[in-house]
Amino acid sequence: MNTQLQAALDKLTARYGDRAADYVEGTAIRREIIYDDYIQTDTLLSLQKPLTDFHDEMTFLVYHQQTELWFRLILHELEYGVEALLEEPANVVVATESAVRANRQFHFLTDSFDILIDGLSTDAFMEFRKAFGTSSGFQSAQFRAIEVLSGLERLSKDEKSEQFYWERAARDMNTGEPTLTLIKFKEKHLHWLNTMYENRKPFSFRLAFDKVLHDKKVAYADLFTATASAELRTLAEELLKLDASIIEWKRSHLRAAAKHLAKAPRGTGETNWAEYLNRSLKEEHYFPELINARKAADQEEEIEGVTLADA
Ligand code: HEM
Image 1 (cartoon, rainbow, N blue to C red):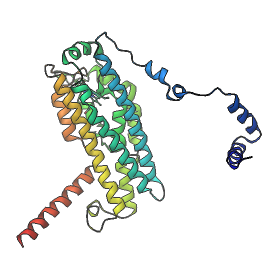
Image 2 (cartoon, helix red, strand yellow; image 1 turned 180 degrees about the horizontal axis):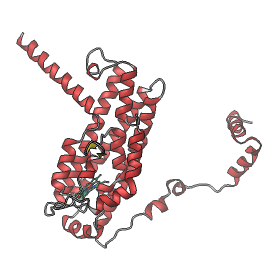
Image 3 (cartoon, rainbow, N blue to C red; image 1 turned 90 degrees about the vertical axis):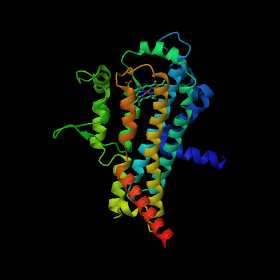
Image 4 (cartoon, protein in one colour; image 1 turned 90 degrees about the horizontal axis):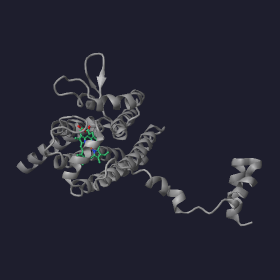
C-alpha cells in the first residue's frame, strides 16, 4: 500500500479502532460532493428576504448580512488571539497575527461602505426603512461582542451598577425611558453579553495583554521605548490599530447615516443619531492604557526633538 494511504489508515484506526474499515467504506460509497455542498450556497441564497418590493432593499439587506459574516470572522480571530495570550507561556506571535487579521477584516468592511453610501438611493431608503419598525443595527449582538472582546469597559451608572455606553443611548428624548429597541435587544442579548463581560477576566484582548505585561513585569510606559521587547511592541501597535479599526468602521457607518438620514432626526432605533453616533466614535476606546502610553511616548519624542533641534 502506498505510504500516504497507510498513514491515513493508521490515523483512522487510531481514531475509530475496529470501525475504521466502515469509515473507509462510507467514504467510498458517499456521493462526490460539489462546490455547493461545501459552501451551502442554496441555504445562503435562501436567507435574503426583503420586507418590501423596493429594489434597493436587497443591497441594504445583503450588505448587512455580509457584515455579520465578517463580524463572525473578526470574533473568530479575537477569540483565538486572546486564547493565545492566555497560554503558558503566552504566545505573543500568534496573538499578533490574529490582531493583524482582525484589522485587515475591519478595513475590508470600512472600505466597502460606499456600497451603502453611494450605492443606495436615499429616497428609497427613507421609504423601506419604515418597514423595519424599531429594529436597528444598534442591535447587532456580534458588534457588541467584538467591543467586549477587544476591551470595552462598562461605565458606572451609580455606585451599585454599571452599564455599557450604548445602554444609555436608546432612550426616549422626553421621558428618558428605554426605547423598545433597547428593551428588545436587552431581552435577547444582555444576559450573555454581561456574562461574557463578567467572565472575561481576563477574556478580552485588553485584559489578556495586561496580564502578559504583568507576568513579564513590563510597564505600559516601557512598551514604546528603544529597549522594549520587539514582540510585545508589535502586538501593542496592532492592538492600537484594532482600536482605530473599530473607530474607523464607526466613522464609515456614520457617513452612511449622515448621507441617508440627513432629513431624519431619529434612527429606527430612536436615537438622536447625529449626537449618539458622533459621541460613540469620539468617546469609546478599547485600549485606553495603550493609547495613553503611546501619547506619552509621542510627547516625549516631540520634546526630545525640540531639544535636539534647539541644541
Ligand atoms: C444605510 C445604512 C445605515 C444607516 C442609515 C444606519 C443607521 C444607524 C443609526 C441611525 C444608528 C443609531 C441607532 C438608531 O437610532 O437606529 C445605527 C447604529 C448602528 N448600526 Fe447602523 N446604519 C446603517 C448601516 C449599518 C450596517 C451595514 C451595519 C452593520 C451591521 C450597522 C450596524 C450598526 C451598529 C453596530 C450600530 C451601533 C453603533 C454604536 O453603538 O456606536 N449599520 N445605525
